[in-house]
Each structure stands twice: as structure tokens, then as C-alpha cells.
Image (cartoon, rainbow, N blue to C red; front, side, top):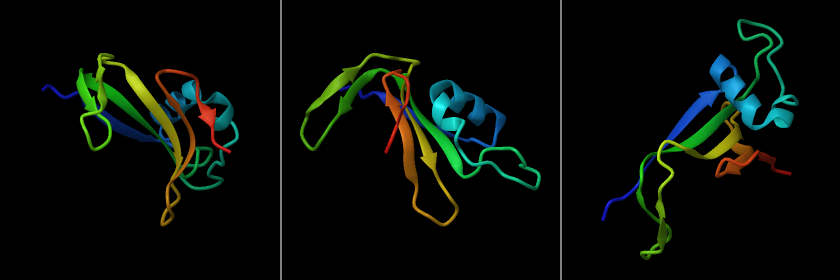
Length: 108
């Protein structure tokens, strides 16, 4: 059985790439996030990162303990994006996420 290869990647929103990618996926949410007020990261988004899953190779994706699952055929596509609040020394919290290329939805 050939299993799918799904890679998880991450970028902090204080980086140029992270901020631009998050702004494309979650434009309303990114506009309301806190920013650094002094130091070398002044004006950059604070304590948040974006995480996405990309299909590297298609194949079987197992779901659960048994052989339940599905065949993943979206090679080269991003299938899930999450905006995560990750303050130093605290537990991560998902702020918004989207699956299957849909526009992002914020969590209440």
C-alpha cells in the first residue's frame, strides 16, 4: 500500500513571508493581531505563526485505528492552513483555520 506524504510547514508572522501568506488566507484576522511596539521587530506581528499542510506525494491516508481512510490525490496543493497564537512559555491556541483551499474561518 502506498501512503501519501503530507508535509507540515511553519512560518512566524513577524517574517515577511509569514505575514504576506497569512494576509492572503486570513485577511480580516491578521489586521486585528497585536504588533511589536519597540525593538528590531517594531511594527511586525507578535506571537503568531501560520502552519500549513501540503501534499508532497499522493496515496492512502489512514484515519483512525482501523483501515478507514481516503485516497489523497491533490499533489502539490495546500490542504490545510492554521493561524496559531504561540506566546513564549504558554500553550498554543488555534486562532483560525481552513481546509481544502477555502477561505479561513476564525475560532470564537
